[in-house]
View (cartoon, helix red, strand yellow):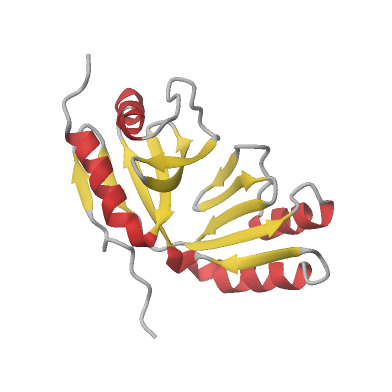
Length: 185
């Protein structure tokens, strides 16, 4: 079995911001009532992060734990930890009304880096989100043009975007084109 490859084989483009395809990560979707202590405690233990509040994302190193809806969370972690984490969650939640599923090969992860104003402008061109109020630690499920996605700012000067792998090239090209356009003054 060969090692997984990223959706776009590490493609990178420089414009007003840098847009890059990131190396494969482990991605676990957990469906279950996040207000249920059994579910949220199991998720927090597996992630090593507190379960974030509504529209929040917890970030530590290469780990991300995102609130996606009242009954869905997304855990992004190093690929090497995927199997053990998924097995542990599945075992812990066996008697709960919850499901943990490996979504690693279904999704792509892109990163934008650059000046804060330029990052916000690039995303504002593509997503119906008020980027003036978008904050670090917040996640937004939305779209880039016609593509479903979610994005967040793990740190100042950085935005990460997740989308379906099948539309990764389209999303990458949208971001690259928005980053190549002249700045609006």
